[in-house]
Every structure is written in C-alpha cells, then in structure tokens.
Length: 396
Ligand code: FAD
Ligand code: DHB
Image (cartoon, rainbow, N blue to C red; front, side, top):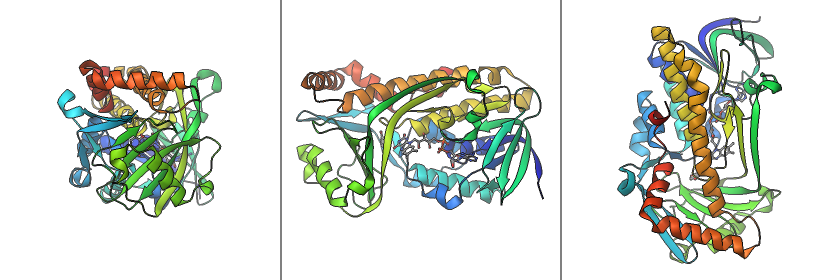
C-alpha cells in the first residue's frame, strides 16, 4: 500500500552531499528522510574522489563522523608538478599553514552511511525519487518508488542532492534555469591498484603525450590517471598497456619507483563543466553535483558538494532555531560564488596540464605558465590557497 511520510527536510540522494546534510541537520534536531535510487552496495562501491579540503574534513568532524578519517586519512602538506624535465613541489603548509587529507570518497560515504544507521535513522535505498512537486507555493512533496509501489514524502523543504542525472533539477521548468556548460575533448582513464604509491605526495604531470596524475588512497593503494581520448573505452586497455603509458609520462626520478599490479578498478571519466543557476526554487534547494560539475583536476567536485551543504545546513538550522529566512534567501547566491571560485581554479589548472592539440606553441605557453607559477612566491601562495580550498566563511 502506498505510504505518505512526513518530515522536515526531504533529502534526495545519499552521496556525500545528502549524507553530510542529514548528519548536520540531525545534530540540530532537524528531522530528515534520505531517499537513494541505488542499493547500499552500489553506493559504497563507487570509486570517485580522494582529496578532502580542510573545510570538508571540518564538516565531517562537526557531523561526528571523523574517527576513521582522522586515523586512516593521510595528511598531505604539498603536491609536485612535473613538466619539461623538472619536478617542482608546492608546499601548502609553508604558504597557508594548512594541508589536505587523502581519504577516499568511498570511505567517507561508508562512514556516513554506517553512522546514520547506527543512530537509528533510515536511508531508503533502492527508492528512486520520481518527481518533486509543489515546491514553489505549497507544501513540497517528493514522489518516490519502492518495491514497485509509489509513495510520497511531505516535507517543509527538499534538498536535491541527487547528482548530475537526478530528478531534482529535472523537476524545475527549463525556462527557470540558466545552464552554463563546457565540454572537453578528452577524458581521464583511471586505475585503482593495491600497490604502494610512486611518491608519498601527489604528482600532477604535464607531458607531451598528455596529462597524468599519480594519486593514492593509502600507503598500499594507488590511484593513477592518464589523459585519454573522449571516444576511448576501458576495453581497449589491458593493465599492461596502462602501466606502460603511465610509465612513459612519469618524471625520470619516479619511473624506477613505479610498482604495478592488477587493477581493482578501471574507468574513464569525461571532462565536463556544468553549472545550473539558481540553486534555490522556492522550497527546493540543489546541492552538489545536482547543480554543478567540473573537471576533476584539483579535486574540487566532492569539496564543493561539502561547501554547498555547509551553507544549506546553516540556513536550515537558522530557520528552525530562529525562524530566520535570510540565509535561505541568500543560499543560492552564496553557494554559487564559491562554486565559480572553484570552477575558475579547476578550469585554469586543467588548461595548464592537458594536451589540447599538437601545436607546440601552446605547449610552450603551458611550460612558461608552470615555470612562473612554481617560481613565484606570490603565484605559489595563490595555488596553495586554492588547492587546499577557499574558506567557506569568506563567502557568507
Ligand atoms: P553524488 O555523489 O553523485 O550523489 C548523488 C546520489 O543521488 C547518488 O547516490 C545517486 O545514486 C543518487 N540519486 C540520483 N538520482 C536519484 C533519484 N532520482 N532518487 C534518489 N537518489 C538518486 N571529484 C573529484 O574531486 N575527484 C575525482 O577524482 C572525481 N572522480 C569522479 C569520478 C566519477 C565517475 C564521477 C561521476 C565523479 C567524480 N568526481 C570526482 C566528482 C565527485 O565524486 C562528485 O562531485 C561528488 O560525488 C558529488 O557528490 P554529490 O553528493 O553531490 O553527488
Ligand atoms: C584525485 C582526483 C583528482 O581529480 C585530483 O585532482 C587529485 C586526486 C584522486 O582520485 O585521487
């Protein structure tokens, strides 16, 4: 029989945005329901981002879900940039006093799910939202499906945290949205393998054959990416082919350190940038990938989902505690200012490191830009403060 559930905030999506929001609201006694299209196994198995900014780590602590992150996460105080025949390190700690935490999005998601279930709060898995209704004027409703039946959630507010292909944004009439989009002519082919990383910090590589990134999930698990053609397929790549191509692109000093092994996962992510404005429609609020995606260079996607949740959780908490609506009214403008700030960095960093064409002039310009960036104290500081993440409070 069809159910009607009442709650204060209906959250669509159990990615980092939806889960973090549910925890932060829970801390303030605000009731939530989380609907998730996929199974728990599927959500916990997705390999995605790996770098947490300070602000994201701080929200995990505020949510009280930080134990494993703080015990197992690796604090990185810098990254290296390899270009020409050089490797230059940028020291975040020296320039900003802060670092980033290497902790997989997969692990963060598992922790947030387990903590919510431990607290006796439900996540409705395999319960796709089909539509959001009446969010403009009346009491919003989320129509969803579970076990082949249609149900509804009636709530004060809806948080659309359902990623770039979710229904929240699709529930808004097209003429009320302004979309900004940029598509890149290449993708990233990524491998995850149970082998020690080539270096104890990340290396971003500008190479004549294309971009490469040496990342990791732990001291024993490596994550590597190489730039590939947009039309390429994982089936075209054996493990051996991948390691050979990565080896070619590594700086000389790292080549001998490369340990290879069978893939745990291999996937291709196309590079794309997309922003939907505004992020608020009456009582429906978009957060995370539902409103914006960007090229992965600089690892901003997950961290922007967290900053949206910071602004939205503050706004909803002020509403329930003091009946204040000013932060809700400002949510879209505030969140978008930080979104565009991160996009600016991601696009610039993408343009600096990838091979766009065969024109040697363009490669020379990239090398000159990298030489300036790593050689100037001011430019290094600017890079470091963007990489570790612009402080949320600056945008409030
Ligand atoms: P998501 O994590 O996408 O979560 C949305 C959730 O909503 C999902 O669980 C989805 O199943 C659910 N959902 C969707 N539709 C419905 C519905 N109708 N009803 C109910 N639930 C629904 N960022 C980086 O910084 N570095 C990376 O290396 C990186 N790699 C990536 C690789 C891939 C393949 C992808 C897709 C993204 C990657 N990103 C990366 C981006 C980063 O992972 C995202 O920015 C981050 O996941 C955003 O979190 P979110 O909660 O907003 O969205
Ligand atoms: C990772 C992804 C990124 O986009 C990045 O800039 C750094 C690390 C990663 O998946 O480890």
